[in-house]
Length: 364
Image 1: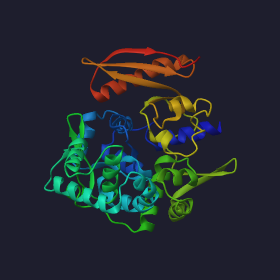
Image 2 (image 1 turned 90 degrees about the vertical axis):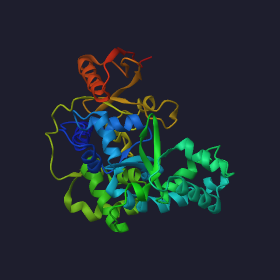
Image 3 (image 1 turned 120 degrees about the vertical axis):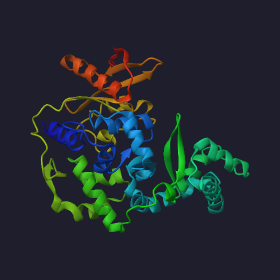
Image 4 (image 1 turned 180 degrees about the horizontal axis):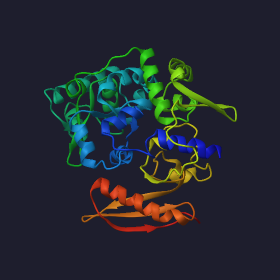
């Protein structure tokens, strides 16, 4: 029963259940940041939370500079509101850059080399130019700086945390890179304390029920700073003690806790899982390895029934449509038809018909 309460609260606060139409920028602003290593999974994370929104609408919000894709919290790619990019970077960058000094040294990327890379990048992109990753790294190579062995990735990563670049619109199937100051010239600037306050309020409003340990993990900040952020906003939140842990959530309840929370096909890396350090309320620890096969850090798209992760799913895009395979951990039973309807919602989002949908159980 406790897990059901926590799961249902998270589904509604994250706008997965009970959501109405929101613009992509409204979804991203409420969640604060949406994890986005996989572009197509990340845009579905936004679409899922705004019924009726199509992929093209989200990509238009990127082109119109309303949402930004860049490296931010925990050193990971996220979609964030364009207006918030500066203070989020200022909150994240110092600790992350310090933590990666050893790795940079291992790759032979000293301060002088990184500074030269940044000069090349700025020269290449200045004036509103947009280049994809491979083209930009090729220019660095032509200047005699080797970009292989993950060096190129870390050059771009470092430039993003210096506030120089972010990702721009898609060019075909390739993401472009742009100069941040040119792409988003007007950003909010907040003090460190105000940044903690803003991030804490958005986190617990959009991801409650959650603990301060969950917040610290998600934001990539120290537990001390997480507690400071929570202290600033606790009067705007509600808390409950469950088995010795203090859970925080919005003061308003969006739905009765016993209401059926529905059936959903979540993307990989979704905030419903990645938004928390402790995921046991929605994901059985025994089946948790099945959504991260080989413990390689790649989170598979998930099936959620009644708030619980009950399987994974995979889609393959063909010329005339998509094929979807459902991989439940056990029997779907009465939820099977609802899972198929959830698949149709995904197909409508990307604008392709379902050619085939099948079930292949992960039970051995």
